[in-house]
Length: 348
Image (tube, rainbow, N blue to C red):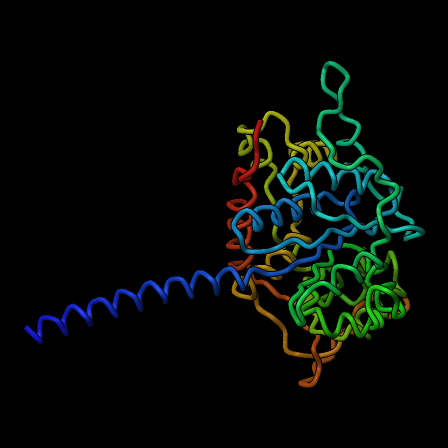
């Protein structure tokens, strides 16, 4: 009888321990959800729109908490398009910060953000809903950074920069204020865990990558002074991973009107495949290095012409990503699988 009681007592304690372990695992999973701020030149290259789609899918899966989106393209349609995307994907409360007096880039490409914002239904109503009334009155991005970072636990935020470095450089230059007694650089050092960028080129010294060239002085400041580890996805990575236009044409029949698909269709004549520059930066920032080869530690210098130079240094905290043909194919398959998923909050 005593042995029988001990058996049931042991079984009860085992089951209790099992339940507690599962609860702890769930809490740990929830606590490891990455806090993310996205920095984008939305409206220049359509890979930004696909990268933002990835962000929403990661949010749907509970893998990230999106603290805010900053645009470093000054055109008014950039923020409006972000509002459309936030609303359509079911995250209308996501804060948006805008740039004023930023880099000149209005004639660099077809502004797909503007194209989508101007789309109308047959009755003349806008094709897509907005959640904000006045996009011109949104806060300056570098000040919104301060507000968002000051509210976060130390060493908890991943910044993903898939555009120019202007907002990040301005953030570093901010003084202490009513938001935080720390300077911008001090605030970043305390709150940011990782900066993941799409910038640079390391296999061709004569290639000056777009995101760097559009604001060279800002890129120089960020690569030299940003106080946390920085991992960049360079030009040579995204150029060999092309998102298939056939997926755009065939894999989204579940949506009658889709703001990312409409952006893709308006950017170039269909069908076309588009390099996945910005997408690879988002992939690394959220899912880690398993899909890539990562350089040794070092330093990255930006020249006055906009070239990026890497110097290996064990004491450095700058890295860049590398892919071979097998990795590139695996990444492409993963991107298609992720992007073609139906959003959790989509409600036609």
